[in-house]
Image (cartoon, rainbow, N blue to C red; front, side, top):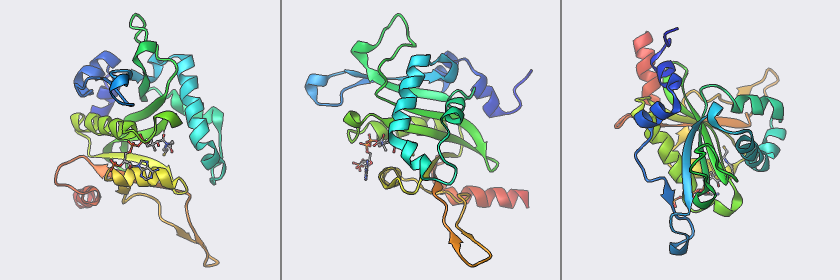
Length: 234
Ligand SMILES: CC(C)(COP(=O)(O)OP(=O)(O)OC[C@H]1O[C@@H](n2cnc3c(N)ncnc32)[C@H](O)[C@@H]1OP(=O)(O)O)[C@@H](O)C(=O)NCCC(=O)NCCS
């Protein structure tokens, strides 16, 4: 069956074709801890069905370590089975961080242990084509060394090559460190992020999460996208 939309067609590409078309031609080896650590780290782009059970388990452990408490404290709660199912969604892509000497070139799919990862998807939100960052989690020893910024840069580059309008994500408001990190990279609360609700008894119900985004179209601010769309629809 022919793909229904332009993004479906991109999502349906085999990972080698997706990589050739949308992955920035960066050297994926780099160092994190100074010259003695030269070229010790690698990033690898995968599809959700090209990631092994052990790699997925490493990703899940990182996610659990940094975010399970935030989920538990949220209105929706923590649902590990549902989260594992989401992690295997067909169109989900992964960027895995591993040490290059622990990489097995004969098995491209093998990167253990996983020191950090990002998962993302090309999708539509509120009628706008976006690249959505589902997860970004790093092991504590590799935080604060620019890996998060590098991963977000790759996400945005994929989004630009796919010609989507925004890079987007959801963050728990109580995760102040992550909110600051995204703000530092130019993200702001999205115009479609749900606002606090005023209940009938007058109490204002704050939401525990927000949607943040960054325009990937040069010269266009996030909020212009929605306005243009509304104008078109009207
Ligand atoms: C959030 C996270 C991905 C950031 O990655 P990182 O590699 O540590 O961040 P970087 O070193 O790339 O920092 C990029 C910029 O963000 C800023 N930043 C990073 N962490 C920050 C923090 N805790 N508070 C304020 N600013 C921060 C840095 O100062 C840097 O700014 P600069 O470029 O002007 O120097 C990482 O710390 C992490 O995995 N945290 C736990 C998991 C998590 O909370 N994920 C988010 C779920 S929504």
